[in-house]
Image 1: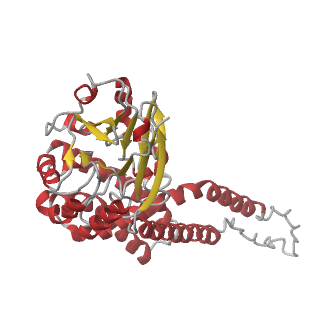
Image 2: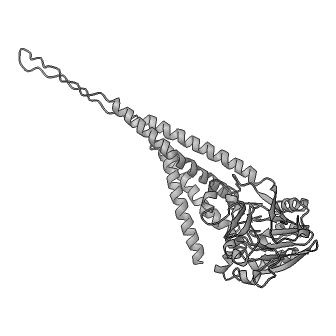
Length: 414
């Protein structure tokens, strides 16, 4: 309960500060005091409250009707913030130039004209004309309005493109990864890898059916679903997840938990996924015997489990210790950061998700601060790590620079 309250308070504070900045740039700087500024201020306040309300209500109360407007505004808000932040420097320079021009345009003080003294000696001097400095506020107002219009159109355009990408079919990619210990007989073993399907308030059964169909077209030897399958309980989303029972592969379909499973009733989902025909690898490994060779396939619980008390934390020793060192081992772990521990056990390849490839550029730059690999193939302490972008999305139904993805990983012998 305390954690939830802390999350809501933090979210409200952050969104409040962002919306204050947006109000300053989009409302205060572009309107004169009066009716339109008051209307803009009320709209900014409502939108500021919409973000935390959406995040809390769609999870706690199941108010899914809030999801589309709330999450779409979250994406527009993000790109408004990015564009306006980029415009800060040129806007400051432009305002400085306008101010400089206004100062140079001010007339210099003229020398006093001689006073003509009349016969009575009481003639009055001519009145001096008062000159007010003109800093041209109308031009600054026009400049602010132009920047606001540009930011609004850009944010709306990028968000629209991102919605189309996120809600479209997943991109099917193929990657070949050589493993030094892979037997020659197993050369070409194919693992269909998918993560972050995120069945939830914005994506239902049709979304799952499309992903299952895409995986089945790959005709894979193994299917690996590496976490973040759902955003909701089995009662809410069991029907939407049901198409997973149609997954086809030669040697089985496997699942490891992601952080979102621990927010959605992990114990129920482990049982449900198992019932649908996917074997859940919880800190364990098994032998895959194929084509006359043997490969160890291991899986660990997500690192989030350590702080929930709902399931055992990731146990790399239980999954990877005391095995035949001549065999290659492929580890399924939701977060790429798990490779730092996995490498200590000589893991050949780790398959992960979690990052969404950044989901919305330039957010991928922030993901790099937490995860050693954001998207694609990388290496951590000698262990190869492949990170798929994920087939769904979390939060805003928007993907920019990181399309939804299902990957066919083809293992190659040296």
